[in-house]
Length: 98
Image 1: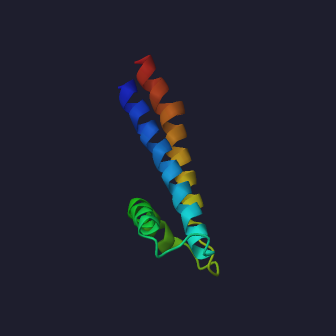
Image 2: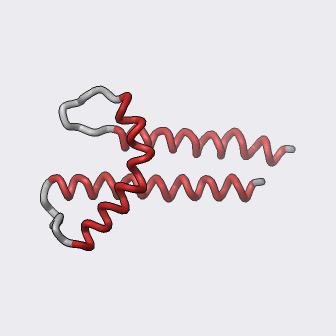
């Protein structure tokens, strides 16, 4: 059972970095640092969008309009951190003591 928790924590950590990469990519795209017409850049952007948008969309529905500032990735990162800490500090010790 501990292996399952470690695998879930690893998946959460990987998704954490995917969200950060997506946020950085969106900034680079918004400030025209990267070429949006490049096929490779477009495929990376599409991949990051498809991986993060299903988790960010529900958060964006409840967020107030902040004038073009999107803080939904920060909220998602906080949620992932909470789930990770809950697994490591609450669930794992209970399973180890049983």
